[in-house]
Structure formats: structure tokens, C-alpha cells
Length: 274
Image (tube, rainbow, N blue to C red; front, side):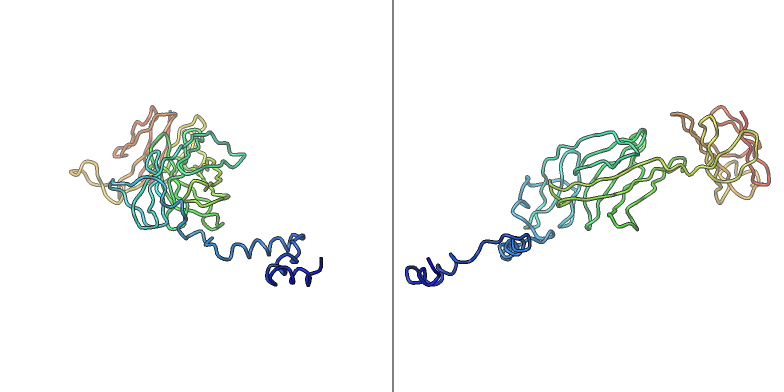
């Protein structure tokens, strides 16, 4: 049957539609799919029908539209009407290695020895990560896969330990259940090697037996106020050995710390002895 015969039997519009060849090449298929989607809203920052999932939230936490925050095993977000809602999460814990990236969904945690990293939410389009050491929060920050901000070295408050986290990939809508990220993590030891009996200065040092010490100097004298401040400031030492940690103010020539003796000289040098 020719196109003209079809036009005689049916309307011209139906006939022309019947004679339109189906897309066969990859380009034709792509163009056809694009035409089908012209009337659909597909922007990632536009609310979808699933934005109203979850249950109303009446707690004290607040997030902005488009942001998501993990509250234990729930995700807090705003629906398309601006209301606060929560949806249930099923966070997992996994053990990571330095050799390969680890995939996380919202609320998941990856453990690297004494360190762990959790995906804690999305804020202003950035992935919010949290790093802890032995269960204590060390740092939380926003990052993306942009090379300028993808890698972060987090440092404990006492500066004895550092850990590098890098966001390497993201997939799906990060504020929704289909979102996922991939990260890598590794110890980034910035301590300088040191030996017992040798003079060292300010900074973080690692000794052969595992002792780590951070020598620091304050602006004033916080030891005995009745005595002069002979060294021009307050010297302190923070140390860790195994699971032991301690801090002392070096207000005398000799000070004990984790079974070691620290000798302080007027020149600002320190000598650690067993």
C-alpha cells in the first residue's frame, strides 16, 4: 500500500504517521528519545514526585531546600512545599583499605582502623563528610569531585594524627535514595622522625617505639603566676602511645610524660629520654 492509498482510507495525519520509518541508528534513537522527553522536567534541582516521601518532622533541626542531613538512621529534608520531612535510612558499616575506593550511600560509614568516615548529608550542593578517630568527631566538611577540593587532610585537635579523605565519584541524586559516592581514605603521617636523647624543636614527632609527641608554645605563662616566665611563653607537650594520651605544661627543666622524661632548655629545644 502506498502513502497516497493510505491517505484515501484514513486521515492524512494518520497516514503520514504510519509511513514514518522507525529509528534504527543510534543517533536516530537518541533524537527520538530526546523528542519524547521535551515535555518532561528533568533538571536535578527540580522537585520530583518522590520529594513528598517520608513523614513530617517536628524536631529542632533545620535544613534549607535542596539540602539533606543525616539524623541517626533518618534523612531530614524539605518537600516541594517547603515542609520538613524525614525518611528512613538503612546505614551500613564497612571496612576500607587504602587500595580501593569504597561506595557509600547516605548515612553509611567506612572504618579505617582507628578512623571512620561517614556520609552525613548534602549542603549547598556539596557532599558533607564526617571524620572520627576512636569515636570522637575530628572534622566535618563539604567537598566535591573538583580536584581543588576533593582531597582533605583532617587533623586531630592535638595534631598528633592526620587522615586524608578523597571524594572520587558521585552517582544519582545525592539528596535522594539513589545517590551514592565513592571515597578513598588513608593515614597521612605528617610527623617528623625523632630519636631519644637528641634535641628537637616545636612540631610533631614520631619515635621508633610508637611514641608521638607534639611540642607547642603558648603566648603566656599559665603555670605558677608568682614565678617569672623565663622561656618567654608557655611550653606544652601532648603525647600518645598506643591508646594512652596525655598533655603536660613544661614549667620545669624536667617533666614526666607517659613514662618518658622531657628536658627543656632555655634555647627552646626539647630532649626526650626514656
